[in-house]
Length: 339
Image 1 (cartoon, rainbow, N blue to C red):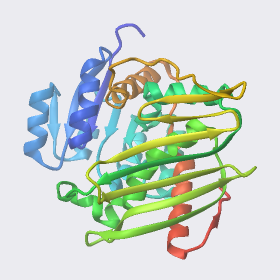
Image 2 (cartoon, rainbow, N blue to C red):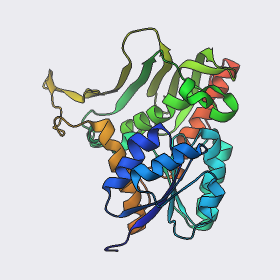
Image 3 (cartoon, one colour):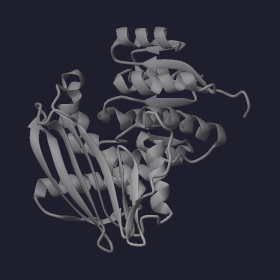
Image 4 (tube, rainbow, N blue to C red):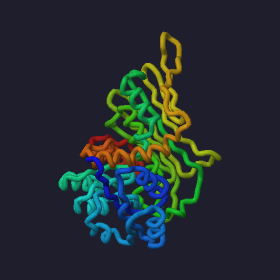
């Protein structure tokens, strides 16, 4: 479709929209920025003027009334993901939705089913899968360079900070959960995609601390067990009492091990541990660049009618795991995973 442009309406002009989504759309020659929506009219007007959107709106329904929008990008608080995505899909628009796709499995399944019923694309913004270092490690594991994966561990421990600028984060009804849902969703998606460990047989989780009037958790640790004995360990926190934020991912297999931040791969060769780390783009900010690649992929999928790497249906697995982890945390017991 040479020369065709995808006409985008963006909903929610907060941090991720301004820092990641909008700059990526502006760099893509196949995109036309048609409309931006935000509940703060001053912000919406400012974003429209600064970034070349044709129009701004305070009301999402008003934007959907336009005939010249092909796709809707949802960067709103979690509780608005399902109703906005469903409305956009029913109106005949394709949708890119920020993570997590929804607060729970019931909402996520409704979104996926609506996309199926109306023949539209629903993609979830799991940008980690578009990082060059993550994709390289995924291929290393898929090619059995590490042998059989025995266990993996992943974590994001963020040093203490004030969340008042996004107060809805700490309201259970609006967010759906705390640090586990916020930080754990993209981490679990990334580690299960890299490791190839897709369906756990049982999960266990503990949550700690309460933040805000809604009482969402500040920290969590979890373990997922898989058939054959492999396991994944997860730890997340919004409130690390240390000076530096920590972010890591390790994969351990029968022939070697690998980690991220930075990417390193070691294998046992003739009884000697050898560094076999593949080359990736030097000096590149993989995380920052992943947003551009994610948006480019969304646009390409719409132009070529391809299924996204991070489709709504694919996202259901992590949502179902999250529901099971919260059940485990509330009951204090391991939960068998049957999804």
